Image 1: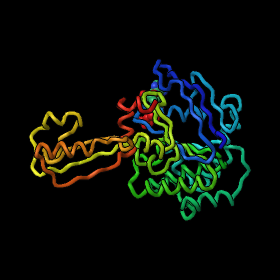
Image 2: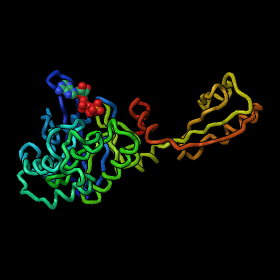
Image 3: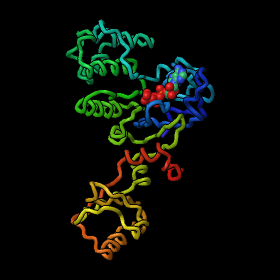
Image 4: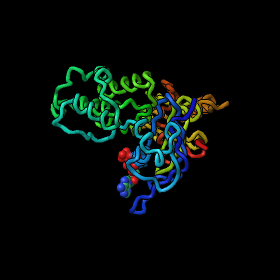
Length: 313
Ligand SMILES: Nc1ncnc2c1ncn2[C@@H]1O[C@H](COP(=O)(O)OP(=O)(O)OP(=O)(O)O)[C@@H](O)[C@H]1O
């Protein structure tokens, strides 16, 4: 598949001297959902703002659908839709007017049938004459999406689409994003909710301290870096872990009632059976065993805290 977005060697140094992005290289393919994951302040919004022409890069080049974002500014802008983190729309305007106006801003001819289609898809049609100030938070967000879609962009950026929304609305939003992709759009979303990336993305990029530390297919990432955690519920609580079990680097949890062992699920030898034998030799009884796959969250935390760097290489 062809890249609709190519970011090459992009750096951003703010006037304060702060380096928010360092030599970012990234290709996003047409039709995918790409999640840019990172903690607060990692540089996600800065990167999106540069691609959308709101912030200037200090170095590097970016093309959108083959157009250089600086040289072919207009062509780029009409290819991109941006749903910013903050609601930035006139609260006293009516839903349909603000969406129509957004389309006009891109020089697109008025198309009532198209506006009706997006308002219906976003369940906003019944609210089309309501003032934005009268809508719920979730509906306001949908208006922002309708505005971003009004000029038929091929590449849609969603900056923290579900920050501060409740669980139900978050699920609705996920459904909506999938629907948008089915209609042919490429979607780049930023999030610091790992669950969101896990749920939706085809590929995940992890950004930390202005550096893209990893870009990977989500399923490959979870397999490659996947760990399993074994919980052993002890017959009798334990005060401390015997020295002879040091090689398994166990953790005593649940006030001494459980031992936790983290292992590489893909390894030839996981160490599980040797551990169970060692427990038997020491006369340590157990009542239950339970294993769980590491989630993207575990992987992310390891990466962001540095421990996963060698695995990301
Ligand atoms: N105009 C600016 N001048 C100086 N520093 C800035 C400016 N804008 C952002 N920064 C800094 O750049 C870093 C990256 O900010 P950015 O908003 O891109 O992060 P983010 O990953 O989107 O975080 P969040 O999830 O909190 O939105 C932060 O340390 C921020 O303080």
